[in-house]
Length: 434
Ligand code: FIX
Ligand code: ZN
Image (cartoon, rainbow, N blue to C red):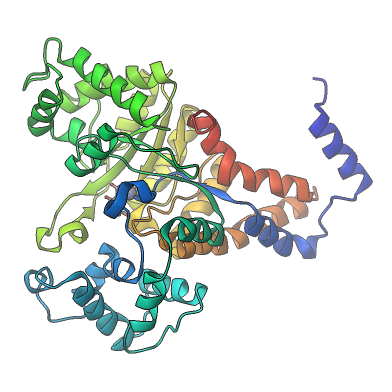
């Protein structure tokens, strides 16, 4: 096979030794490349200014993040019912007092808020939030977004867009201007998991579907997907699935997945994203903070990848016990791309374990992380944590490679980090097409 130019110049650089990294300098080189390589954040709940108040940012939203609400109810006598009667500001004050003043903020989520305050040069140990509030109130959102994404080393944010969410869908139907750093996703939880209601919503949007999703309903759902594809230009279609998800199994959801969603994804050449393992609302009193996790039967993923070889599946699993299995399935199916350390997995000790395993089993053929940020400034600490966790893992991998007999070049480190942070996502989605 004729050597390509880039591998030729890589060869020359290697043979000239100019690009080789001495063993002792590997950690520094890795940190430098991680710090200077901007990433694509493939799954967030962030929105650009055109979406108005759906997009969350600022100190009160940072403090009332459902991760912190879950921790708050463990360190406060305030009942959830009483908490929900408070204003956003009162809720934020209560959480700051309980988790940052009365206790040391050492959890991943509380440390995150501290890291954001520090990033803006704001005090991190004051009893009240007045200085932080006036800082965020003085920000112009457009410029603030650009600055925050720069600080986080994120060049592109992938949203989560629900075509059946009344507030959001009315904005799309009115027409939303594209934003250079935000891309849409067609999120289909309501369609695939709540047909009883979403069937009616589709009828209201003018699609002739019936309660059993029978007859021409499938064709009408495909028309619905095509209309929203045109409107959103989504980079993928997505759904979160419970730990009880099975495929094949007779259900309206599975029939819509197999007969409408997967064919549409093939037609539009985009992947489908499956986020598997959530147990919704085990404690409804906590609202968004009331969801939990369960180990899923990943044979469903194997069956889907086998039965739909022309479809690409981006998969993230919520249970720690499913991570190794997902890696093994990815070795069996090259139409399966594991991505991110989702939600309850997004803690440095677990991210480390998952990422080490993935490097050992998949090399760089996976997407290591997504932020799942719900509040804009969260990308600052979530990506700082990711880079901090990834650095020793990649350094160890290159040091072992070097010890086994092959020195690493700066070019290879750059190539690998670019693949992990960007090109895997770009080649798997239609991020390069707008
Ligand atoms: O389904 C999802 O996209 C989840 O990420 C969210 O529903 C969840 O509430 C979350 O914010 C996790 O980080
Ligand atoms: Zn999410």
